[in-house]
Image 1 (cartoon, rainbow over the protein chains, first blue to last red):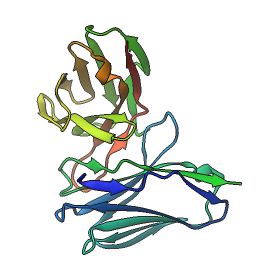
Image 2 (image 1 turned 120 degrees about the vertical axis):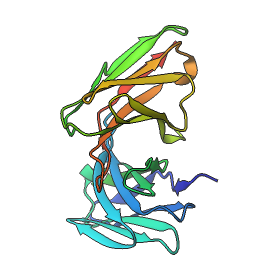
Image 3 (image 1 turned 90 degrees about the horizontal axis):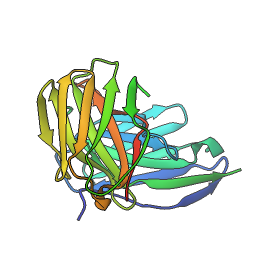
Length: 111
Length: 112
């Protein structure tokens, strides 16, 4: 079993839809959680960075962490064609530890 | 791109030849990382550095070596390239403390 699992997709939604992207993990010691967006032939770009359980909102993006279930989510409201990309979740035990990535979910937002 | 430059951006090389990839940062961050990204595997850590001359192995370090003689530069060397090392290589930096990784735009390496 991989440490971090993600639905690979591809996920295709109409413009304006609410998108839910999810990751599960096996290591209960993970405390820091990140979401990255990666466009084709570019490096991953940080979207959200959260510590421990709870929600964090930034514009159209909301990150949710449920440590009891070892489950994290990224919600995108009012999705736009420019949101079409691969989304990577990542996590680490402490802020100095190695960061472990999920395999990524490919999202297409259709106009 | 958080002040990270990777060079070269593309490289084609033959099996058995040595290859060095360079990561240069202008952020003066302490931590630097090399990842490779392959379909079905996502991002996997090759090596990382927590200071000048201080490096450690990641999960896929076999066949790779690194060096960091200055804060701003982190070099990844493939001593004798193999076809299995065809991949996209990403450098990342991290300030330390309560901070996430920031990535460069990658080097696409093809070993024929």
